[in-house]
Length: 148
Image (cartoon, rainbow, N blue to C red; front, side, top):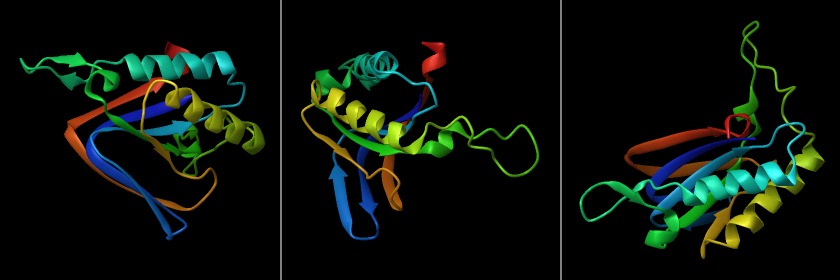
């Protein structure tokens, strides 16, 4: 499982050029589910993301978590995070999870986030989406479950 976490002042995802879902200060999480990812891996990723201290305290130090500031989450599925570009010019997505299993894991990831963060918005698995965000800082973290 791979996740790109972007600290944002606001963000939105538009699904199929129709429905727009918006958040205020918090994180945009681009999530790629890999073949072989388990519930245990997913829960570790959620815990790591929610516990990260990326927001500044009153002294300008990154000491506050998303829970500490009452931040919001926007979770967007993105299997392209699992692209293998080592050979040739066209990426291979063989490491991406089976779509049915990956969608189930994506939905479980969202539900796990909701246990700790009050506002969790999300895109739709497999849909055409447009993501808009204001990256605050900019501050972007890349997490790979293989490295946790």
